[in-house]
Amino acid sequence: MTHDSSETLSHLRTATADAHRQLEDQIDIPRTCAAPGTYVRLLEGFLGFFEPLESALQKFDGWDERGFHWRDRAKTPMLREDLHAFGLSESDLASLPRCTDLPDPTNLAEAFGCAYVLEGSTLGGRHIMGALAQSQIPQAARHYFASYGEQVPARWREFCGMLATFPTSDSDAMTDVAVNTFHKLGAWLTVAHE
Ligand code: HEM
Image 1: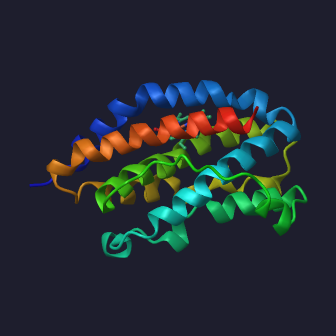
Image 2 (image 1 turned 90 degrees about the horizontal axis):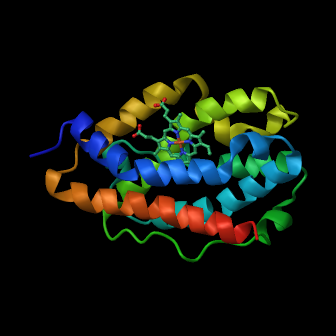
Image 3 (image 1 turned 120 degrees about the horizontal axis):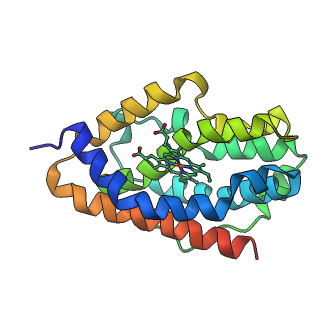
């Protein structure tokens, strides 16, 4: 038996709502976008978390069979492109700190719980593009927040369809990993900004 899409999603959404709000407060987009320095620090923090996480997630088998193609959805290349736009070289990027206290999914379903957090950030990105439009942040440094552009709603619906293919028995574990992903990202950004 599988959850229908809205049931799976509402479980994830309800369980992660507080953690999302906390992260949103912590990131404080208006302040972050007000100056290139704070914006760059946020992107560096994201890279330090997303790069090792995405590389760990890709080690699970079965993404393509579920319709999730990393070459189209990975956030790391977008972040790298944005940081290059600020003049950071490959070796600058290599020397940035990477998070080692990452979420630790044990199977593909749990890995999809992590991916829910990463993919969901494209929805927030649409709102953040509004804040960026009022800012001095260069166009060439907005790839991550723009993500799939006009395709964001369609790609999100497609992702929700993938979530719905997992059995109900996976739902609690997927949700636990998603909550944990938010908490660990928040903790990492706190450390990275000290
Ligand atoms: C810091 C500024 C952020 C703002 C202002 C923000 C705002 C939003 C908004 C308005 C939505 C709902 C969008 C819609 O339904 O069209 C949303 C959804 C979401 N955001 Fe954020 N967000 C932020 C950061 C993040 C980050 C950093 C992550 C994760 C890395 C994230 C993960 C999610 C997820 C998973 C959803 C989907 C919830 C669902 O509908 O199931 N957000 N965000």
